[in-house]
Length: 400
Image (cartoon, rainbow, N blue to C red; front, side, top):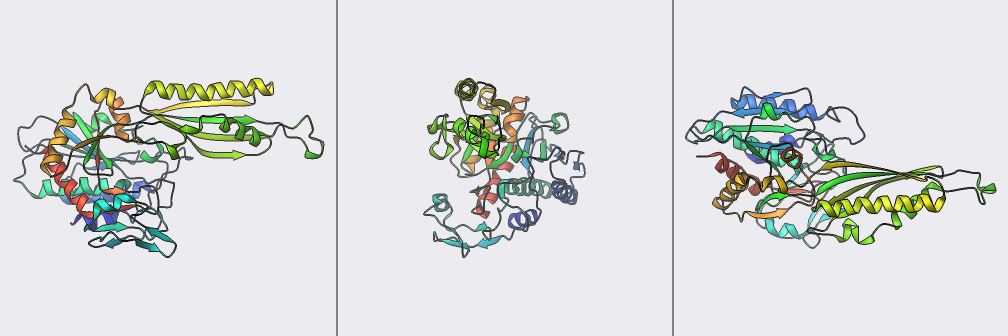
């Protein structure tokens, strides 16, 4: 099956995860894609493929030579809730010429705004109709892994070591590795296939926390409010304005960290501000947390009671600290990328992957690209040629 056809099959499934859900997976519709993938693996002849109770898919291909390393590949099935993933209507742009792409009369995908399009001149691009995301993050990764598996199963001349395959749920809401079965996966190291630029092997990522600020106001009838009312929404705004304005993600890049206000719900009586905190350096992330605590203490002192409650939760860590102790997975990937005519650059991820938490749990797991760009929104697109090249890269990683 051509990788284009495979990918278009996967984006038909609405697999949006839900951060407000307490179920596992957070949306049961993710299991529909999981069942489809298990059936497809069985059709390839990989009879050991199965879906577990958490909606995760596991499979493996035994070695057909004396290579001892057990290497795995992981992608996630869910898509971001930042944009609808329901009723995706993809379209293929053949031999992209560098011009504006009209997704619909109101939404234009332009290289003037998205300069990464220039990397894909004369390639075939899959785009959206401008009403939904595409799902390349990470159904492009799934398509690449499945195409690699199909090639391995069909071509007995390809000598390879043990190959582990896993597809996870809820990566987009930070839970993709929560129930990952390391024993069932049974690999020495692995790769998430969940990046953008295919020239890059990424083994640095943010250290990450989330923060929830609860503001407790005092609601009084506005006609009799003088000296009594404390508006929680206004106090929430004051809290945010006390934070460093240069830590806004809209003006940061590279190794610069940020605090990002993701949600603000407020009334006079109560308000809630939700943040994500990110930095590649643990000490700098700790300083950012301390800043929130200092603002909390300042406002509690100013108002004369505990108007602010602050909750901080750790999400994931920078995998570089762990991978640098054993660089086999990086050396192997860089060699394969270069053999396929790619640069094999190292680049820090301004985000996180399932691999970050799996590395923390003991399975080194850097990230490879997929050719998917502008993820989490209606301007998302995928390069068919890039997916094909990455299929070759994966085959070279596991080959003798």
